[in-house]
Amino acid sequence: MVRESLKTLLAGCLLLLFLASCSTGGRNGKLPKSTGMPYEVVLEGDTDSIVTKMLTEDVTGLPQPEPLCRLIQVKKGKTRGNYLLVRTRIVVNIGERDFSVTLHHDENAAPQNIIRITAPSAQQLRERLNGEKLRHIVDEVELKHLADIISGNPSKQNREMQDEIKKMFGIDMKIPAAMNASKKAKDFIWISNNASSGMQNLLVMKVKSEERRAGKVKSEERRMKNSNAFHVNDKALIDSILRTNMPGETDSMYMVIPILSERGLWEMKGDAMGGPYVMHRIHRQTSKAAKQGYNLYIIAFVYAPEMKKKILIKQLEAAISTIK
Image (cartoon, rainbow, N blue to C red; front, side):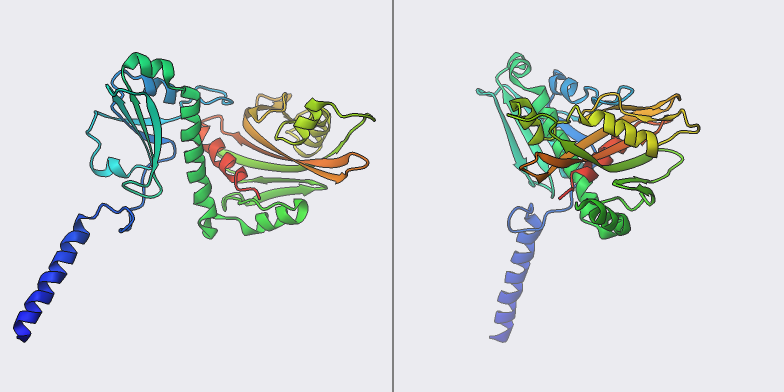
């Protein structure tokens, strides 16, 4: 009797082990960690290279051409093995009755995003697929990945610099551990990795903002106040702050940002230095009655004349995205 019970128990255990080994993860199993370098995408079934052309367009705001994605091309239905675990995958299926774009999460690994695109024909795919939106989705996914690298691991953060920014400006922002050099002044801080190759920098500055006209505020100005747009009156003040705090080798050399925008190119006045930047603006109102307040400008910029700059500036953009 005991022997029969043991046989039954053993058979049940083996069945459970077999079922567990067949599990693909899903809700009942733990998915493996996703893989892939930043902005690396597995692209399946793009036989006419329509999606390929969209994803390899150059990133805006860089001084030289650099494609958004590094693509791993796979034939239709042939995504197997390690390619199933890549963080961002796009599957193109031409020949279906309807056009559709759907986003799926964590099918074979976590975190993972799979974009499935179907179309009746290559012509329909070319006409109906919005390349700008597709690039935006991929960009958001990859920026979140870069931000999670910092946010999810305290050892990769510079706590001292984070505390200093919170003390000076009242914002929480994750600062990469490698950015351990700094320069402070009134309402200004410059943080840098001070690298000889691939120099990454963050500037945070407070710029006074005051409505200079009485009466009704124009709708455009109101829109700018309530968004991440950049106030034209701040340009001269930022130029002055940069000239004082970001000098070059001589007094006639200093950093300038020719046009205030979410992204673009900075340069060194009187020198051949320059590179890409990204900018974020936070408006804070201190007196509603007097229409007074200030803008916080967070500017990330890269100086790396000898190398590609996309990942360097995207890492800084990801750090900015952690602001609370």
